Amino acid sequence: MVEPSWPLRATRLLAFGLAGLLTGCSFVPRSRLEDCHKLSQTLEADKARLNDTLLSQRSQYSELLQRADDDARRLLTQDNEVKRLRGTVQAYQDERDQLAADYARVKNLLQASANPVSTSMIDRFKEFARDRPGCEFNSISGVLTLSSDALFEPGSDELKPAARPLLKTLATALQDSAAKDVRILVAGHTDSSPVRQASLQEEAPAPGHLSLDRATRIRDRLAHEARLDPARIEVAGFESSEPMTDDLDDASRAQNRRIEIHLFGRPPTTVTAPGP
Image (tube, rainbow, N blue to C red; front, top):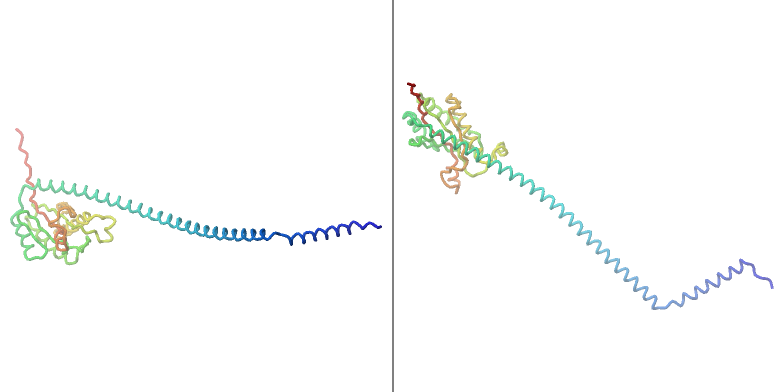
């Protein structure tokens, strides 16, 4: 008998092996197939659950990022507010220091005023205030009170056009020959309302600055109209620290917004006695 060739034997072995495999596949237990099916379903459920968890974590991450951004913006806003409040506190402290200096200057002025104001000056100021709305003159204290609303726009240090002729008339009283013996203090008073004029809001965050600015405006105008040396006229700003009445309504606040012009007699000249 002739031995089959090696390629033929290999072909037969491969055929027998494939036949065995095909025959073996037909005998896989059904329980194993069911287990594989259940495992596949379990894996699909785990995959869906993991996807849901991933989406939820992504959403939480986005919310945390948004919250962190909001916190950062809020902290920045709070930091800016702290800086603003510190500036306001410093402005009020500076204002208090200025008021203390003004008070000391006015006190010295009062103590130095030993001579009374002449009767002619008193009469001139009484005549000026008579039948003039928003004007009041106290002949005992020598104080002329003018309504700020008649002179300035609310929250501003700019003179109204109608205030110029009023101050010009007042200046004529200071041109009297008796005025040379008079010293003048222009004091500004405001209510507790905030400053409205845009150009003053940064440099004058407190109403006290506005009261001083208004007094300075009046001083400069009177000195110009009466041709007086501005050094003869003192100025002071008392903001809302000396109200005539409580700031309860518009009428009371309007009463507190005022300019006071104080008249003082010049102190007597000190004469030094000759030595022995």
